[in-house]
Amino acid sequence: MKALVFTAPGTVELREVPEPVPGPGEVLVHVAASGICGSELHGVRNPGFRVPPLVMGHEFAGHTDDGTRVVVNPILSCGRCDLCALGGRNVCRERRIIGVHTPGAFAERVAVPADTLVTLPGGLGWTAAGVVEPAANAVHAWALAGAPEGARVGVIGAGAIGLTCMLVAASGGAARIEVADRSADRREIAARLGADAAGPELTGEYDVIFDAVGAAATHEQSLACLRPGGVAVWLGLADSTAGFDAAHLVRGEKRVLGSFAYQGADFATAVDLVGGWDLSWVETFPLTEGAEIFTALMNGRATPVKALLAPGSRHP
Image 1 (cartoon, rainbow, N blue to C red):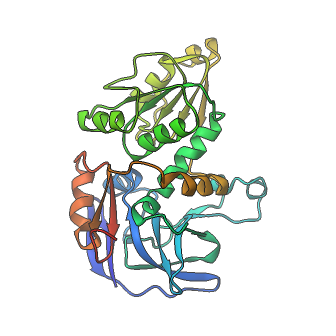
Image 2: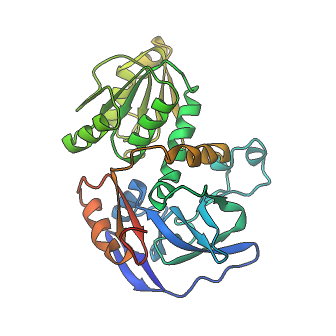
């Protein structure tokens, strides 16, 4: 079958690879849509957790051999530890991720554990199904912030995670949402999707700020613009440097929470939400064009905000 393979630092290639053979407890998923994540762009440019050769792709949906339409939760946890017992599969000490530690969905087919499948509602299209995984990240971040109805919300970064944070906050009853991004095109998209304001930087004072970039400068901005007693939720992974003034954090009794992935309930909520969203910022490309679009995004192309790969069709 065809697959997009991470073969060396900075390089992905379309290749013929062996068909996946499901093991005990696994099923075969025929991929209909697989999203390119910013973490994959960074991981190919600066390899770390992802080791070539690797078929990536952890944001995906498709159908099983019997035609059941599914989206896949790519978090693989041990299921036995204290954290898993508390519902924290996303922070299991032994967690693995499909497309990072095992072959992923930048391919025509992928074998996955049966318990990772979530059945899709009948009316949900493949484009919406393809953004369930990033949306689940935003649902989880909103829950960590306390799901604060009536809050003044700031979002740093108008990529897929930032936009889904904005959309989840809107659905959760945020009173005002402002978005910051250096790209004028992405600011325009945020405004079109309902942001009350969109500019190069946040300028007000906010109850909650979501940092979907994760650079030292955005960490600093997330705290500088946060009201005393407010909460900053960091989702971005651009830089390991914290970049903030700890004394300012203490004196303002501000909170910083790290947010990684999602729990099962977050994933289910995302399935319910995405069908009602404007997803005009998502574009689908054939898997055969995957190397070209992946490389362009990795090298700084700003659009599309979200690219999905689909074996055999531009419009799955």
